[in-house]
Image 1 (cartoon, rainbow, N blue to C red):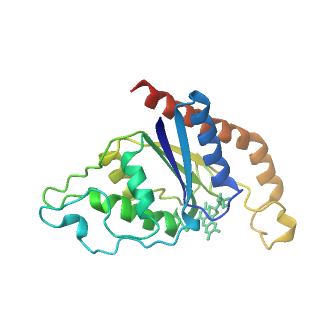
Image 2: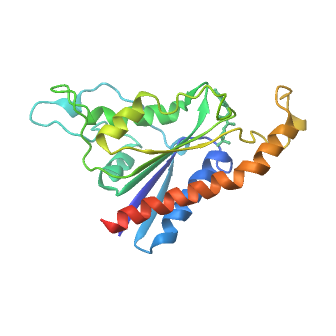
Image 3: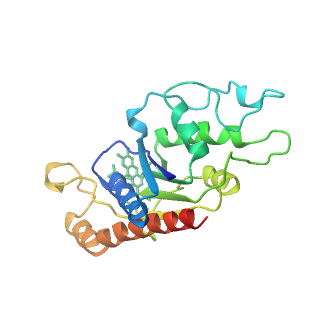
Length: 215
Ligand SMILES: Cc1cc2nc3c(=O)[nH]c(=O)nc-3n(C[C@H](O)[C@H](O)[C@H](O)COP(=O)(O)O)c2cc1C
């Protein structure tokens, strides 16, 4: 059995980010019964970011998996053994959510060697990074996964980036003070792009599973 871990860094269980991740999971599962997809919702877990305990850098006992124990520990241990990793987050104020960022601190700090600044994960694997946002392809403020994308590329392998732009933020724009958005323009964009975004997500999941099963 090969395992793909999907990390949902958004708070909403049925909206844009969750839907993109669900499609990736479906795409991966469609390839073979030998692919197990596990989704972890970070907002359901009680955990901290890197505590700077330095336990991962102790001489003779250095570890590339975080040693701090809380609800994230089993997830980090599972990722260390996984065959594929998918991360998804809405963009909040230009960056991934705080939850995603604190998760990434715990994932990546143990990879980093302070001897030679190399980044080494327990295992390399294909990675897909998903972002959803209000911004448009040519007008957005997203830094995406920021410096963490470089860490992921060095330690796990070059990630594939999937972005859903100009998402529908609420189901009914009439109920909210969202006058800065034209619901009509949003609807038109959604009608033209959303199914295609979901299809791209499905295909990305499928590609990942095909890569893994070929190994
Ligand atoms: C706190 C907050 C901050 C946001 N900041 C941005 C932003 O800086 N840029 C942007 O394009 N969209 C921003 N958005 C919009 C969300 O990124 C967008 O609606 C996203 O698709 C939401 O994902 P979800 O539907 O999975 O919750 C923000 C939304 C919230 C709630």
